[in-house]
Length: 115
Image 1 (cartoon, rainbow, N blue to C red):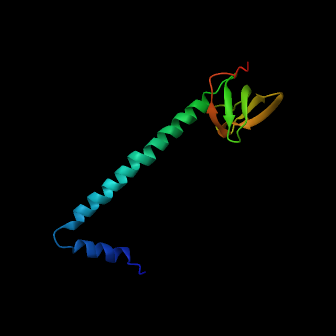
Image 2: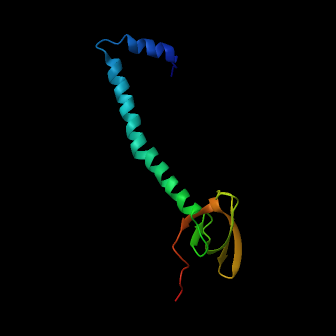
Image 3: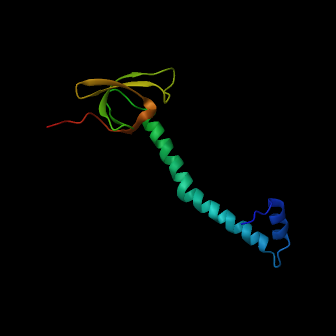
């Protein structure tokens, strides 16, 4: 397998008969646009929505951590503005645990009622 320098490849494309360069540029642009709107943009929007939900966390919310722990928020030790490294104290069963805000993967509306 041989590698062609970028400048040599560009020079070869410019000399293509029939003006194929604009077609190739359009094709690569279309492929990038498809990847952006199908993969990149939805993931960015989902991450932004998740960050907003986690930053709006309040006492009494039920959460699930990245490790799979399910608990109820008991206390929030926040700095000036909510950051992803704030400490959240949760109650899970009879235990109280301290987790970072950035390790929360899901937030429920309230404590689960067993019954």
